[in-house]
Image (cartoon, rainbow, N blue to C red):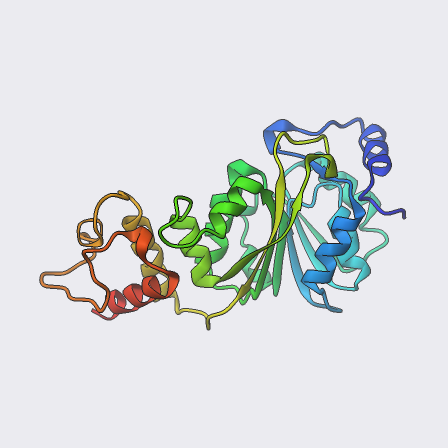
Length: 270
């Protein structure tokens, strides 16, 4: 089968199945194969490695992963696209598993993917990333294509205007790096904004579930009122006379990921 990541193939597939991109699902299909090659070079998929893809669409990246002989679990919400993937890729690639569902409603962690990739629509980016970070799955690498604006937030540093809950949470997992900036004409239909490929590789040993749950509670409360101090925002978690190696008179936006991890560990032990 020809490379799916091209304007001709994408248009042909949509025409063959009588489909159009659904705005409600945030669908913009990748049509630049050099971007697929760039993703493959960075992701470095291995034979029989378990890789999960969120929102495979018409299968441009799915196809490339399968050609590396990886095991791919593709989770797609749009049943029309599930049919395309089932018809066009499933017969040729036996290591493809297709799940027709909303990622947030699946037990995705049972597959224990080594890597998770996805082209994430703006409206669902934060819930998906939060879901992945909260669960213990053994995942070592994340790679997402997201709106440029969101990429700026994910990679923001403490004390910057874009630094917030999602930045800190993701950086507790790994170091987010922008691999490439993608112009609108790399997709069909063209979005109104630029996109970015962001790579995150795990840097810390996995936290136990109790500490991880506490970490997310700390982050949610800490950033709930940005102008207030940790002492105020974390009041529901702090016991009478609770002390910390972190100065609780500081604001959340001034803490780096290591300090948030320290706070979570100390509050878990109390």
